[in-house]
Image (cartoon, rainbow, N blue to C red):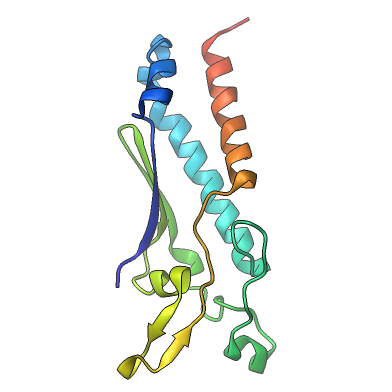
Length: 148
């Protein structure tokens, strides 16, 4: 299994054509992407403790959480503490570094002999809620490049 990540790339024709018109953008994309990554990290951390997917839907409660009156996916907090982001040139990579993150993100068979079925509990993702906040961050940066 591998860790679970999403990537935001600012080199798409639609985005890049706008930013190419802004001279200072070439000097500051890392700072903007880092702010977006920090927002996504905090959004995931908050939702871990709420037991929610990016779209706000509740995760199916795990058997362990139900038996111990605990929270799903936060028994040891190892997974929730693996939330990270990295800025690479014009790319933001955001996700979870733990190898078992993918089985929780997508669901599937796990354990010895693949006898246990892990339900999908989406952790990483961008829905309209997150996109709206990302749009506001980008707009604030673009506005700062054009002083009034």
